[in-house]
Length: 344
Image (cartoon, rainbow, N blue to C red; front, side, top):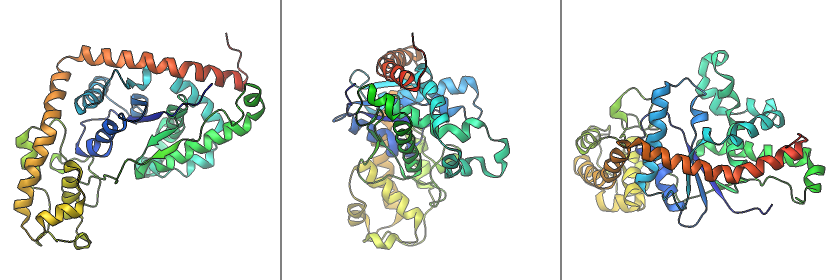
């Protein structure tokens, strides 16, 4: 089975998408499709590691799909699908549950952060979901994964699982004709400067859909008036914008707004400071309002049109899931043969 260069990435459908989701992931997905074969997955199995309202989960799954489409991902050239429609994800995850070691999962920092002080009440799924993430990638024998800083540890685990599987089953893998191991060790895909969008109310925290204050984030569903209000009321400090990058040290809110402008405009933060350094925050915020509305509002409007016709979104997901299954099914079938399962 020939190993093809393939990119896998997923977005959880767990509430309103915001500017951080767009700049940190979806915008980069659009660029990736120009030069890569990609699978873009709405990871609804991951979403239920914490309880989700069923109606809201379905709506959020369609919303993420609508965002993919509205941002410019071509569903004919690339594969857009939701995870639960491809059985190989969950089936391979069970095999990986038996390959991965408890010590590896105990080192996963995200579980500790998400479970907090109530670890005993967390679901088994929340604890083991890095194994499912590995299955998401490897059921397609994907070679590259675009990851942010908070997911690098999980990609390293996927590599560890792939390596251990290749070692544990080296003899049947070799007999099946795979001299270099069955699973590739997926590589992180660097897609330019990291875009880490922080809260508009606290520059030390990531912009998050779980933050109680709506003023902390710009949702992709926000209209122009809401965007303007949130940016104008975004927390800053009394000093003017500096002209040099090191002038942002110790000023997280100022740095966040500069980096948001740079990411949307696709320029370096140094250029933003060159244009606005020494000026007032009010003038800079007005420019940021105009830029954000110009770039985000067309995506919002297209998402609204798509969400008004959920059947069309479901057709995209069904077609994408069929095409994803065509890739995953023979790979997982070969895994079952390697492991020793009797296969029809």
